[in-house]
Length: 390
Ligand SMILES: Cc1cc2nc3c(=O)[nH]c(=O)nc-3n(C[C@H](O)[C@H](O)[C@H](O)COP(=O)(O)OP(=O)(O)OC[C@H]3O[C@@H](n4cnc5c(N)ncnc54)[C@H](O)[C@@H]3O)c2cc1C
Image (tube, rainbow, N blue to C red):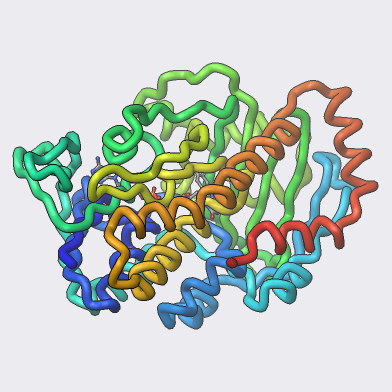
């Protein structure tokens, strides 16, 4: 089947590989001028590692990343609030959890796709998608004036301005979360525990440190920001570290050390959005996948993992397609298989964000006391059950 994939991010690349391996002719259209490796890192939880294993990429991921076994949660005075035993999640789900830099994950997927001779077209920014004169098809119009159609069009064009989502669902407005995230990558002089995530909760602020190796980590500093301030090109680059030091003055020394050892160019500030869940994911021959279908907040920890799952689920449906099923049946089954889980993940991301990014000191004190009373074994098993592939 002739397939066009819009967007060469995590869902686009992974889906392209699965479909090509199953004999499809695949072309990927990406707005950037080359593969987009921007971003700090992601945790490939066991559900993501399961999908990557299906592509034979798990060893490469483990080699460049770090297998995680625990997450330590602290308040901003370095007092331990609790420990999530990631090993319990790994054992429940039969795969490891691996932290990796986003650029490494994307490059591994891109190398695999290139080795399969998948066609990439960069500088192809989707302007709109419209009904074709053929009643079954849609037509993709690019900014460069070209237009394309295919048997199958997969909208993997992300969360912020997905033209595929606009075509399928008439709207694509992302919902602002009320917080911003600074992200970065640090190369440290001293050794850190390469298996343990450190998560510091303050009042309206959070700092998370995810190890990639004994002396490298990526990090995210979240901050309540009720109003979005327009960024100028200078505001991204001027005194970022100083701003972070001041913002996180009350946090433990490790936070200052990590910021201090970060490459300025790796530091980015992002205003964080998700989407309200929608239950229609396809129209004609266009299917939404990844963030364009179900963007969740980073507090869900599952955005990239769900994009990977989408790719695997779609390919399984296509491989096992019966002669009676047409494209709409496959799309309908895909939506039914994925909607409930991804909606739950959007909701859990919002629930955690409301608590972590609360700027009421009284609430935060109570929240931290509750965190000390949490049954972390139950929490780890609950996470494994929610993320399990089925
Ligand atoms: C701050 C932050 C931190 C995150 N941390 C994590 C984490 O730790 N773990 C995790 O699992 N997930 C995390 N996520 C979520 C994760 O990055 C996304 O959920 C994941 O990348 C979704 O994959 P995707 O393929 O749908 O979209 P993307 O990977 O964003 O890819 C979309 C692609 O489409 C392209 N595109 C967009 N518009 C057009 C257009 N008009 N024409 C052509 N191409 C277009 C883009 O350039 C991009 O290459 C985080 C997200 C944010 C915002």
